[in-house]
Length: 347
Ligand code: FES
Image (cartoon, rainbow, N blue to C red; front, side, top):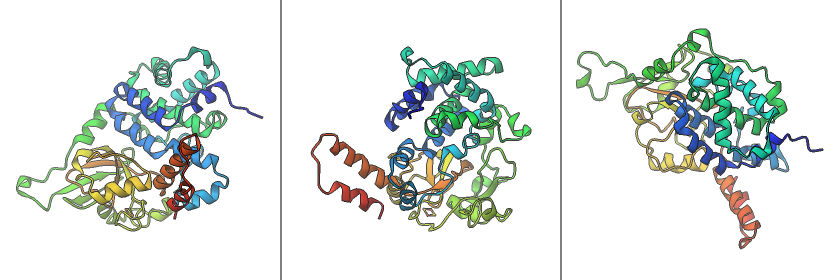
């Protein structure tokens, strides 16, 4: 029996491309404090990967083939996945507003996805007396969470926030100022070339979540020196320091991070990082300083604020081959070797 609600049916009419266009439209309406964070979140939870897993004959087997490790399912982290967005502090109100919108959803009203997101953000912002732009990113996140987790699971999540009062009280301007700040290098710091030290913040809502590295060191190198916590107990992928690593040579995809602040203070993406990050499936861009990086390759040239995704995998080649296969199956010239390309992509 099909129990999909009209709101879910509407959401399911939107694929990865439709969402990319929606996000591009929304970006100018999202407050600067959450503009990068929202894009990072959407990279962390790709719709195309979720759909592929949903449609797989053997989901577990495919997840193994794609080397998925950690928490890649939104349905298991409905209230938590967006903790790094400023808008997370408004989650209870946004969640409620999305549920009300789903309840009264009118298929015939035909407002675009972007317009619906902004209207729900506005409705949630009004009683809070906050600017709608502060809630636009988290509302987009809530819509995608409904699409991937389903409305029933979304509704049954408690709707709590997971940051402490001290951090919740920070203004967007305070957060932005902190991101823009570079470490002082002392009185004669301007004379230093190689010994400059930079702070990497890996959780803006945890005062102890930072470590130092030297100019030119990659983000993973600096993280390994941080022995302040039992990292493996927190996340078994964290074998040394807060950032999960395996190969340290852009071969495994374990160390991907999102950049909330200071993307311009990381060295340009090199040829190997650019090629491999696309193969892993994390991003597909020619930008020299994108918001998603491999920590074992990205060298710091200033203080940065990053966020560590709770999972990793290698699915880019597989999804591209599958897309090609579907395109051909839907009427274009079928090629005999396409299926084998899909299989090759996971080997
Ligand atoms: S540690 Fe393997 S890609 Fe960075």
